[in-house]
Image (cartoon, rainbow, N blue to C red):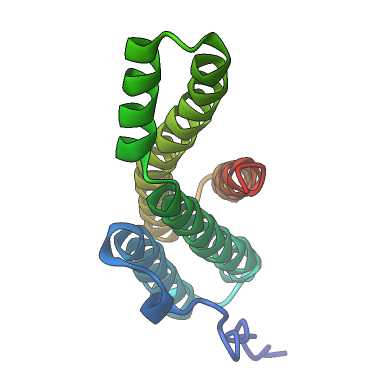
Length: 180
C-alpha cells in the first residue's frame, strides 16, 4: 500500500512582520525566516518515510523558533525605544551636575535612575548578541537536518537540538518581557 506523503501545513497569516522592525532587529529575524525556508525545502525533498515525518514534526518547532525570534526582537526594539525616551545622555549629565552640587538626595535618586538606564542598555545589547547566537544555532540545526536526510542516523538528536533552541529563544523573550 502506498502512502501519500503528508506535507506540513504552511502557517497562514504568519505573525512575523519584518516591516515593524528596524534594521538592527530585522536582520536576526530575517535570518531565522531564511533558516525556516531552508528547513522546509529540506522537508519537501526528503524521501517519504519516518525521516520525512519526523522532519515535518520538527518544522513546527522551527516555526516556534522563528516566532520566538521575532517576538524577542520586537521586545528588544521596544526596550531600545524606551531608552531613547529616557535619554541616557541627559541622565548622565544630570547625575554629574548633581555630584558637582553635592546634593546627596538628588545624587541618590539620579544614581538609581542612571543604574536602571545602564541595565536597560546592557539588556538591549545582550539581546542583540543572544539573537545572533541563536540564529547561528538555528542554522546549525538546519544543517544537521540536511545531514540526516543524506545519512539518516539520529533524528532524536536533531529534535533535541531544535527543542533546546526554541527553549532558549523563549527564555530570551521572557527576559525581554521583564524589562518593560
